Length: 396
Image (cartoon, rainbow, N blue to C red; front, top):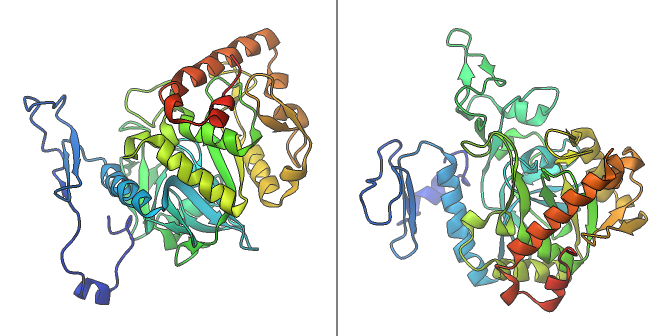
């Protein structure tokens, strides 16, 4: 937690006073499954009234950082500040991008761009003054990590970093990042300043681009779509992605899932409260929203292939330099998305998802299935959503 939270100075600690919240982490000491409403030996409980956060029966360090995030998701909206499960970075000209997405969609990897300053990789707030990082560190997945594929994260793992669930040689201390015998969910916690181009302090202007990341296991969403404000709210509330192997225990093949605001487990208020805050911030600052699919192309899992990181980075480059906003688009007949038909350094045939499928009829079937899942999921929130947001749903 010293790595993950903002580190106070000695002077700040000397006058700190009493904490507002205290974390009690028991490690493997279990919860009593006979306790009322307790379903297992693992329990994570938060009391806003008592200012206490209690973790039982798990050594996963992410529970602590997400607990602090949950607290912020309660406190910030009460002040009109948008709390967000996203990463953020800044270009040399001061343009800021937000990357929303669940674990496994590429938030940490894509925000660690050597040509852009890193503001943070997971948890931020958007106030009337701009964006600021809630944390003072990063919590990166490191399965199959290599210096070639992710040099910034690889070099950040050094003295002061904390590795979790990895396997290493007891003699040489060399870590085998390909080893998943404990779990695929291997992690590294390191101070944000270990990234060479981190922006310190981690604050910035209002975002120019708001990027919603999804890992589409069906392989029917295009690599990138330009969203209207209403579509941005619909997809933000939907929070569609896939549970990717290694993200959760027991998941071996990707499974379609929806998580409101791209982090439902950590949201305290109704999803529409966060969506309305985001809509207000986008409208006030003229931000452009995008849906970027880092999942499959040419077919679903088992048939198609995962999007090339090279092409996803090229898409982000085109978003950041402004060229993609000017590119011609076509409207997807089912999802209503505005899909660019040209992007530098990306094959044009890849941009239209259906074109990458050998079996076009199979694509139509999968696309209609996914559209129906979107509509069914949104039914949980439709009663508190505006007519414009409801109209942004896929056509079934």
